[in-house]
Image (cartoon, rainbow, N blue to C red; front, side, top):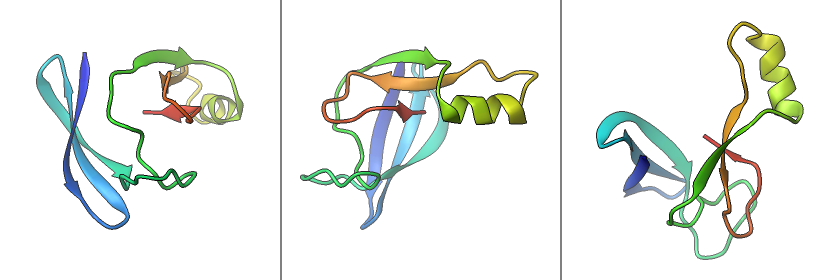
Length: 88
């Protein structure tokens, strides 16, 4: 299980901690938390979401060209209301 804990909110960003199976893995920098969504500038709403491996689309093709030896796809967060193609 991946858990994101939002720690600090700035004017333009949110500092978060990422845990995998209860172990701290890394920090994350998200967009700002807003009441009204601004495309490309708003963090996703808090909640529980599923992850999938997205292996299609332009971003995947670009990374496959850059890293052909290990790129298998992008980890996408799915089921976020009013959001699409959100990658980790």
